[in-house]
Image (cartoon, rainbow, N blue to C red; front, side):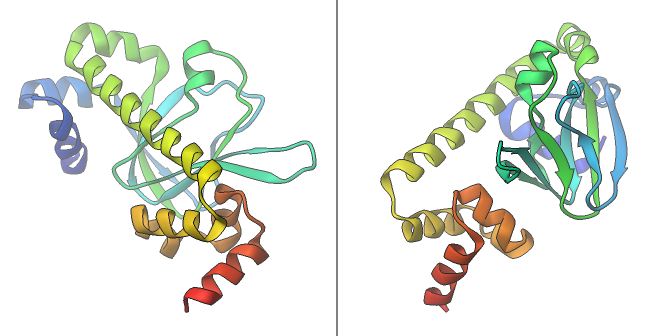
Length: 190
C-alpha cells in the first residue's frame, strides 16, 4: 500500500496491515497528464480519487461560459463529484489536473464491496465527508462575511500550498474574484 495513503487513513481510523491490504486491493493507480480530465460535465462520475502527486481543480462552466472553480485538491486529498458518484447522474462538474499528477482511483461500484469487506472504510469516508462539509461551510461563511482582501488572506493562511501552485486566474475564480481584483490585492501585500 502507498505509504502516504496508509498514514492518511491511520490519522482517522485504527487499521492494521491486513485491513490496509484489503483497502488497497480496491485501488487502481493512474498517471494523469497536465490538463487531462478524470471526468467531464454531462458524464457520470464513476470514481473517487486519492491524490498521490499533483494538483486538481473541480469546476463547472456557467451560462456565460466562465469557469467557476468549486474545489482544489492536492497531495493526500480525496476528490470527486459526490452528487454524480452517489446518485449515478450526469455531472455538472469537471475534474481536471492542473499539473502532471498521480492518483489512486476507487471505483464507485466497488465502494459497497469495500464497505462489506472492511466496515472501517465507511467510517473513514464519513469522517472525510464531515471534514469536507465543514470546509465548505467555512468557505461560504467567509464569502458572505469577509471583504475580498480578508477572504484572500484567510485562504492564503489556511492553504499556502495553493497560492504557490495554482494559477492566479484559477485562484480568483475559486474566491469569486476577477483576476484583476486578485492581482490588485496581491499587489498591496507585496
